[in-house]
Length: 333
Image (tube, rainbow, N blue to C red; front, side, top):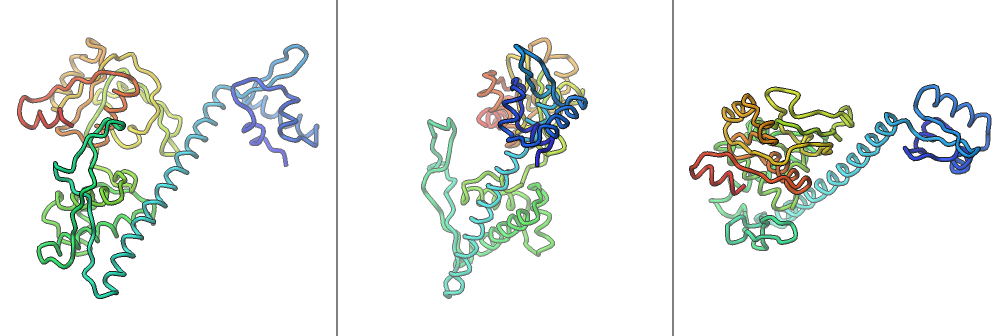
């Protein structure tokens, strides 16, 4: 059955002959076809022109933008579902291996890629440091490792439950949730290490299993993006100078589409007080820059955004930081 949605999906911003469109849609009822076109034209969804005796049709710009956003959202949703299934499958596989080892009367163990400096290598293709092939074994057989082994298994279970209900969490929330299961972490650093272990075992960043840091960084300046997620925000544009406090850098901002900027550089600022002062002094306008508050050592989402600005827009990045060891660490990140 021919519907308005089918007509819309068959059109774009390029002109298409009315007869060619009818042939593509395999129109059988010409009267019905004409009525649908008339309704879409009156609703200002499509526009029409007559050229060389032929009638041509195309989507209005607003409708074309809406359709692009819908298509992008669908692609992202399908990608997320594929990743979700892969992560769930890998976690199930690890759990089954542990179960089988226990069932055979063996002490369960997990092989984790080593994160020692000797196993960190530079990948020329990715242009970043990655883990090598060395692994370390965490086992329930060792009294010194039984606690950390149990913590790691619980974290894997927690992540699998997150995927099952399709919810997200923060690193802080993972730490606090452990108390309800009587899993004792000395502090959040211990639970963060377990999350990193799972990332290393699955070769998948924690963002793919819906665990994010607490957002605390911000961005300010002449820079406009278009959100692609979540669905209700897809297609919505925001400029980073809309708020005097800047815009908080979260996972949806990091994954957004870059629309336009006149800036020719990025200034990453460690201190929140200095970031505020730079905004007040209009440093972004005086030096034609995008300002980013890293909030100390930048969270991963902030580092990803800076990396995108550098490699996708070819903007040089200048680091404004304290002259101490922590500042040196900031530069290295």
